Length: 458
Image 1: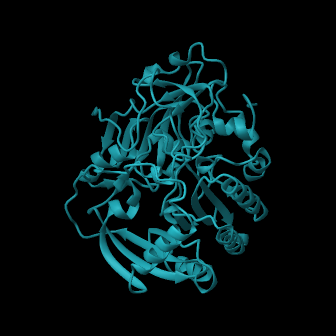
Image 2: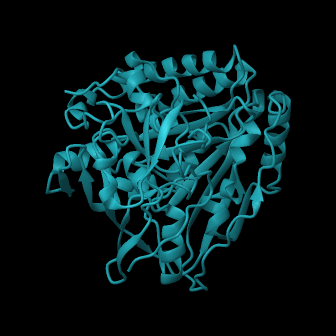
Image 3: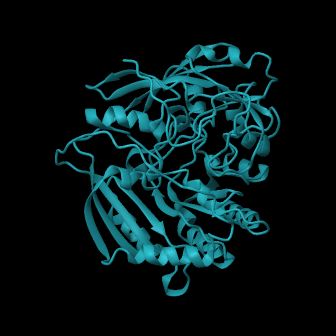
């Protein structure tokens, strides 16, 4: 089966001249680069003929927040034209597609046929190749692990023209290096992933108010048999309201109901907000209203999967609300040994900073090991925060939080990062030297140049 569908949810650069610059979702940093669209599986490696070694990077929808999808003065190979569905087996749930297809396009095909993504992040506007390269995780990590746990095989093309079929048993080193490998081992032409059967679009949802990390941890333990769990946490309040939040959990409904495609989003964030719009007062007010919108301590509902998994996808280009200077996202994973004290200390530092995170997501990672050599999740607590960039404040806070993360034995997520230092990267990912042996010499990124160096590979 062969389908061709245009990507949605982000601006796509379609030519190499006169086009807007390719941006990450955080819109920081901003680099000039040559954009080369890939439309056919055979386009790579010939499109990088004449490109200097270490001068190219494959990119998708640009939903990474920092510079892992950017390359200063380099060549970006945009894969969103390679978005064809190649095969689907309804008996096994195995789907094969080109790497540039988005999760949104996969859902449009699979949901009406009774299947769902085995793991999904908070946006469906990422490509299949990007999901593998960043080994994305979701609300069901404690049950299903990362996206890479459900990838059965893919074809990797190197810049020398060689092609490798990668599976857990065939070219297993390249399989492990590519999952979570930030797009640096080669270009994925196609991939196969095992989808999850469902009988309804609905989620049996429950939201539970909590106060403090201890209550969050108790709810996490009590909900370990529920497939999806995640929490919103108020990182602006102090005193008796410190670390209050809403614990959100759910399972796919087992009551059969119509399985239809989702409608296309119609709302577009209309403008860049001025820098002063998101501040401690406005975000604190929002957080108070959000916490109290749930009148009872516990609330249940039969909810469509779209608002449960993808609430922000309902408004395209919502990153503009952070203003023209963009935003930084900070996400750590701290192991259980220091998870409680580390999370409390970091939330206290954020509250004292006067900088407010509009979106703060708290989640427990499970112990399902990822097949990826450089994958981010580890058993413990993960917290994701985002802040508008404010001169003289945001960078300093992020540098302090990153250092605290290292002291608590945690690590940061490269897909969300724009500030990690070489020292921190080596501490977070001591396996990087082994990974570098599998890096394609023609490929690099702004992130890799920042934390390792030009052309680094062994």
